[in-house]
Image (cartoon, rainbow, N blue to C red; front, side):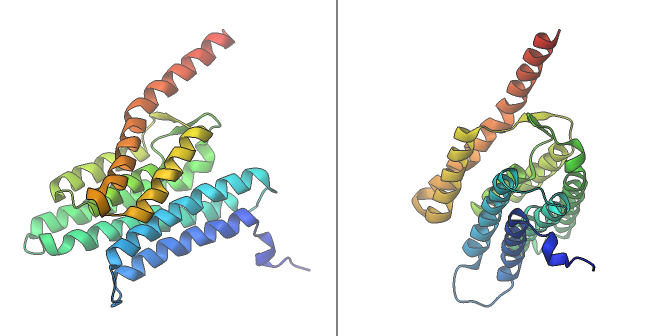
Length: 236
C-alpha cells in the first residue's frame, strides 16, 4: 500500500511549514484592511519565519532524517526569505516612487534579480553545504538586512544598492563561517528584542541587529579563510 504523503513529514518539516506560513501571512497582511500597523506586523512575521527556519535546523539535527527536508526547507525559505522581503520592500517604497517610472522599473528589476539569486542559492544549497562554513551569504542574513533597512526607511537609492549587493553575495563563492552557539544565541536575542521593541527608542533593537550582521559579513570571510588555512596546515 502506498505511503501517505503526510507520513513523509518529520517534526523539522512541520516547522518548515510554519516558516512558510509566516512568510505568506507577511505578504497577505500588507494588502489587508485591518485597523492596525500592518507594516509592523508584516515585519514581525518575517522575523518569526527566520526564527522558525533556525529552529527547524536544530530539530532536524536531533531527530530522524527526513526525505523531504532539503526540498521543503528550500521552498519555505523561498517564500519567507525571497518573496516576502521583496514584497515588503516594494510595498513600503511604492508610494514614494509612484511618480518616478524609472526608479519603479529599477526597483522591480533589482527585486527580480534578488528573487532569481535566492532561487539559485536555495535550490543548490543541499549540494554545496559544508559543516564548517556557508558558501555565499546565508539567505537569512540578506533578508534581515533588507527588511530592517526598509523598516527604518533608508533612502531608496541605498536600498537598491543594498539589495543588488546582497543578491550577488548570495550566489558568490565567498565563505562565511557557521556561527557557534554563543553567536546564534546573541542573534536570537537581538531578533526577539527587535520583535518586542520594533521602532521604539529610535529603532535601537533593529539597528543593533543590523550592525551585528554587518560585522559578521565583513569579518566572517576573514575568519573563514583563516580557519581553512589552519586546517590545510594541519593536513600538510
